[in-house]
Image (cartoon, rainbow, N blue to C red):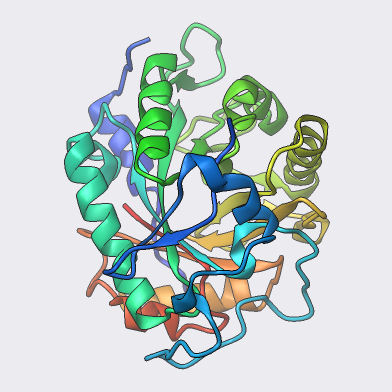
Length: 336
């Protein structure tokens, strides 16, 4: 099977736009009358620790309108108290300084919140047993074709932008997922740069693997590669951060659109405090996307499956019902 689902679309954006960017805990889910799940600052810890009973709509009497595939990938378990045991995450991806890197940059903050909540609600209606939590996936290091001041082919998103979206997420009961595109930098260094934000209870991490290149390679020219052992170093780092700071358990999203981008995949293992999602993020024809998900997620299991949809590049755009009928059922869905 040929997987021609070039998530390098983003790389092309980098090349064409030549982006140069300006430099208490949280919550048990509340289900509103329209079925939308949100978080509130007062209750975040009991939510993640699952010490309170879910809202009645999350109980045993909920009725699904889609077939139920096992959410965990084959022979995998979840020993954490993370959100994915009972909930699904639906996110919008992008950067506020670029309308071409994802929907996040195409909308004002208020529009983003409104549309994201509606998109998450569509999944909650189909599967009320696993309500959807809205999340913002913000690119914090943008891979570049030029070396930049640090010589590592990435540009940092400003602290002001990160803090603005952290506040937006918190005020609207959403999660914030900080995405790193790496360039020639190491995964652990880019994670450490986000340390102050990762200490927030509603903030998690995403790794864009295809933008990590070796010496004498350029993001967007050569396809990147990440060693699973280096991803696991980040998993352990987040696990230790949670333990030392008494944080709720977190999620790490690992993006992959093509076979071979992640080496030593077997080394990636969830922990008692970190859930890991392998997110298939290729775009293109619906059949190819489904085949790619089967090849990279189902046949190479890590723990949970995720699935990215592109509003403009997918042909056609799969519906929430289509997505939830994938095997295994994605617990993380992001839109670009």
